[in-house]
Length: 207
Ligand SMILES: Cc1cc2nc3c(=O)[nH]c(=O)nc-3n(C[C@H](O)[C@H](O)[C@H](O)COP(=O)(O)O)c2cc1C
Image (cartoon, rainbow, N blue to C red):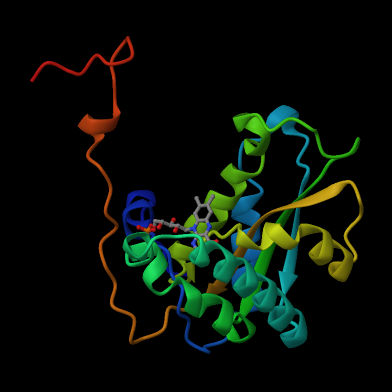
């Protein structure tokens, strides 16, 4: 198996929304999941559940729900917002979802039902596993993008997939080799200096 350094994976990871039809092996999926479950999680309760979806009809249905949410979101945006990088080609993803080799639906099973709280820490036991999954995919040359738009149809999706009432979906992640004609752009982020304070909110490092 090809090995790249952690820093290589961190810096090369980007949101891939166009995929080639090159198949993704079960071995790669298992390797990626085994990395995902190494993630930190509250009380080591490991309430993550992963749905590995290869069935064409299931992928088509999920793509349809995704596209409906996408249209709803885009309709509520200004033309300027729509023209920004994450949204320019995002609509293609829903249309292409049926053809993405694998959809990974990352879920949580809450023993006592989903907590009612909307506190920011609510997803803190699942999103580290999501990031592990995506970095492990990157290390194998596979592309991913974390998506959450499908949650608008959470009820319908749970029913369709036979998910229990005490479960919820956290992310829908297409997984495949990036399409060859996709031009890779370096991820753009604000510099650390712009987003970091020292000891007290608002205190920047003296330069
Ligand atoms: C919570 C969350 C939800 C997201 N949902 C979607 C989504 O529904 N569809 C999509 O195409 N990208 C989605 N993204 C991906 C972001 O658009 C992407 O991470 C961001 O634009 C940075 O892309 P880059 O790493 O290629 O620079 C989501 C990202 C996060 C963290």
